[in-house]
Length: 242
Image 1: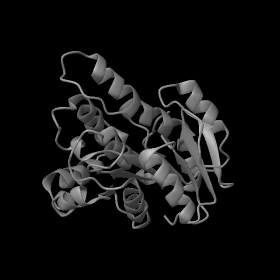
Image 2: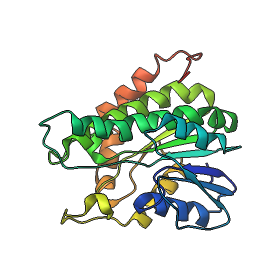
Image 3: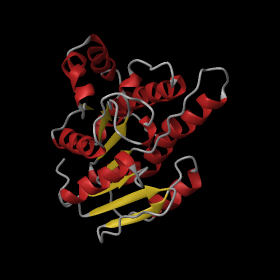
Image 4: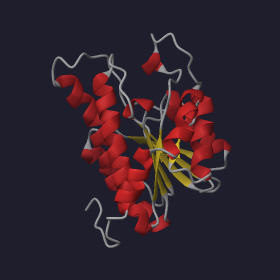
């Protein structure tokens, strides 16, 4: 998957990693970048098309996707991360609405375009999909669920020529990590790592120093072996997201 001359949709594109992904896609020669945002977009490049896109609104997602004629790459980047202590359901439901169901609904709406182009889905996850940081447990729960969905989609869509990639993000210097005094990767370097992983055909992308420290162990570990084994049970004629 070479990004040059491809068409890319990026959700959560107004700031942080999303904005860096838009700029990196342009740098790599993308023909068109659809930038999904909930507010006005600052990037006015002639190859960028802003889309008003609240991933918690199915009707808004559908309207946005109807503006796209062709699509090669979908990057599900929109997400939230809030402090909580699992004292109630509100935080879990709020995170699931964006980080899990938002990703699901955008993917479902965009899938016919991606099936036509034999394209790629990239889901921005987190190392917390593998092990939670207990000060943001609802976030970790939502990312673990999104990771499981990513693995399932990968197996279900393999026979249709659509590849599915999970991005395991470590700490990145964005608004989400403000207050965490720990080493963080820049959004720009992470965007480079994500597109490098996609272009290299990596199913699981580890785009920053923290995530790269576990990459080798993950790829040769028992969990990855189980994923490959279970994928073999998927019938070639599986119906997906209908």
